[in-house]
Image 1 (cartoon, rainbow, N blue to C red):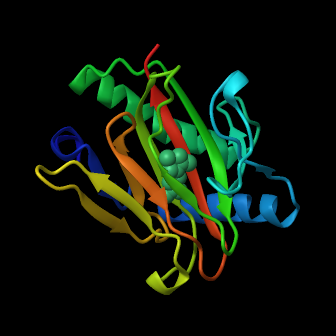
Image 2: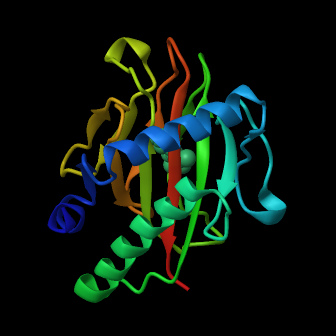
Length: 195
Ligand SMILES: O=C(O)CCC(=O)C(=O)O
Ligand SMILES: [Fe+2]
C-alpha cells in the first residue's frame, strides 16, 4: 500500500477499518444527516473561504480526537496508528490531521480540484473513507482521480463502495466527485499534514 502511494501517488484499500466499526461510523453520519446537523462546505482557506455550490455541493461536519463519541475516538486510534507507521517507515513527518464527515445528496458534486491551497501546502495525504451501505455505479458520485501518466493523463474512477479507503498525495493528484445520481453519498474525508 505504501509503495503504491509512493509510486502512483494513489491507493485504494479495503479492510482498513473493521466491519462493526464501519457500521457504527455509518450510523453516526446517517443520524447527523437525518438530524440536519451538517453544514454546507466552503472552498479556500481563511479570508479566501466562501461557499460555492457550483464548485462543491457537499455538507460537512469536522470531527476531532477529543470527541466524546466512542466511534470517533476509535476512528482516530486507527488513523494515529497509521500516522505512526508512516512517520517511522517513510519519515513523512506528519504532525497534524484534519477530518470531516461529508454528505453529497442527489445532484451534488465537487468539481476537479487539488486539495492544497496556494496559500497553504501543508496537506500531504488525502484520505477518503466511504460509508454508503449500498452503492453501485448507477448511483453516480464516482471519485475520479487524474493521474499524471506521461504523455497523457489518465482518469481513474473509484466507485464509493462501503469501507473503501482512498489515499492520495494532496498536492499531486487532481480529482473530482461526479454528481450523485441516486441516493445520498456518505464519507469521511481528511488530510494528514506536515507542520
Ligand atoms: O469524497 C471524495 O471522494 C473526495 C472528496 C474531496 O475531494 C474533498 O473533499 O476534497
Ligand atoms: Fe479533494
